[in-house]
Length: 124
Image 1 (cartoon, rainbow, N blue to C red):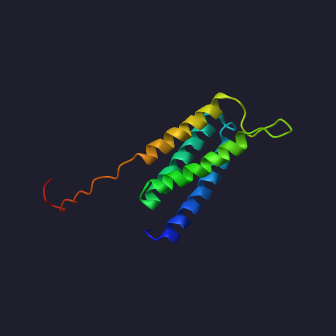
Image 2 (cartoon, rainbow, N blue to C red):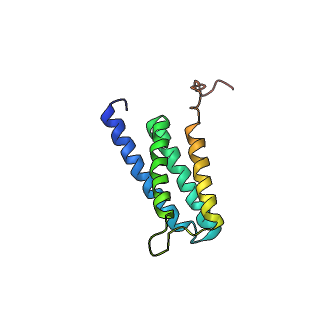
């Protein structure tokens, strides 16, 4: 995908995917404490890694991370009534730091080296 409109469309789609992943993660992170947190972190990592693989570069992971971060900020800000989606607990901080670590891992991955596939019967 080298055309500019294609890259913009891919980045926009991955931004929305990151936004939805952040929303879903916010809803399950405290629902089933250890399992929900693990599920939210795995979904976040999968979204970032999928974006990286889909675009073949850092743009995919960055666009998905931007959407996830916007969702996290909007849902962690208390409303005028005094409530928020995230409660101030250990799972919220682990989810935030885990998401940051996941995007750093996905953004700094190097592509696998292109190696020739050995022939079937070469004995190696």
